[in-house]
Length: 235
Image 1 (cartoon, helix red, strand yellow):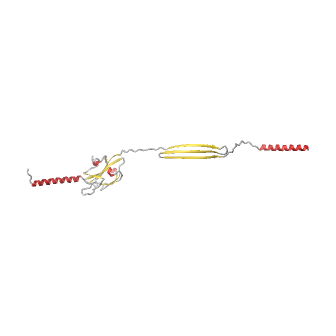
Image 2 (cartoon, one colour; image 1 turned 90 degrees about the horizontal axis):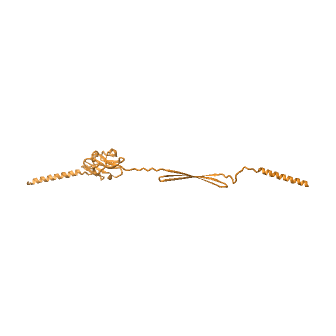
Image 3 (tube, helix red, strand yellow; image 1 turned 60 degrees about the horizontal axis):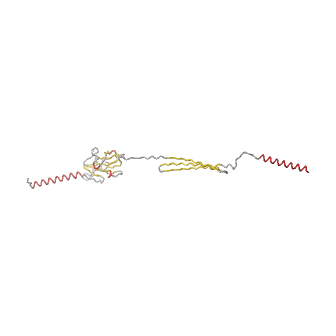
């Protein structure tokens, strides 16, 4: 069939229109975001969808917003300040307009809070209101080990007696207490010295000598009397 110039022009216009539609569809299919932590995707995803935690490289199972500690989420921005206990969060999905942002935990950083999470830009280049959001995570299998330290106490008593023949008897008592525990050791020593009064060099026998002195004096007096009598007789 012979093509006239008019027919060729119509075909060219149709091809151009198809190309423009393809470019427009491509532009709609590739939303943009002004948050470097997020990756934008077109369409809709919800916590109840079977692929809720498989989009954008996510793993795990869905986590409802109520299990997080957060503020916002009903306007343009969302702040997450706490995550569920016993769960390792793998990412957050924020939906708004005709697209949604996927925030992987690695790009959010390990430290909370995660601030100013948002949905992709709309066709006017603005951040739309958040329609819904949710998280994904896996059960934390980290094992916690608890170490118990037992304290041991040991007491040692030593008694030492020393005596001197001439004057002093002493008693020394030494008590040592040792307490051991993890990273600490305490030793306490107490000494007591007990002096004993001097009892003298010789023991007392209870023997008295006063009557011997009296007897001696009487004998001396008697002897003197005998000598005196003898002298008188001679005279």
